Length: 157
Image (cartoon, rainbow, N blue to C red):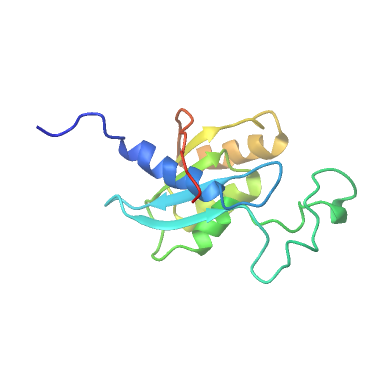
């Protein structure tokens, strides 16, 4: 008899997104993303961090202060990283992401062809960026679905 306590596909793919978030060096917010096609194959993953070739020891990680002295002009979000790391066209795919996308990410998600977003947290839902994101995603016909937080247990050897 097969076991019945295995995780669902949603839990599996959100677990991959949560695991990816653990790669982020951001001291305040770690976000992971996983893009899946209709055949339940992972076609892209990403996490928030600096662009390739940018020394994360010499750029700021601060979230407050003068704009150029914060992380905001330099960090690439998890969703664009997953899109850029994708191995196939993303038409009709599902994006699993640990934090609801901002307006800049929403534009890229829509443009890439993602049709469903599954997310865990929307802690900035009152922010204008997220409100703009929700408006665009709705008008583009992107389905949104929130799921409970997934815990990823990792032990370091």
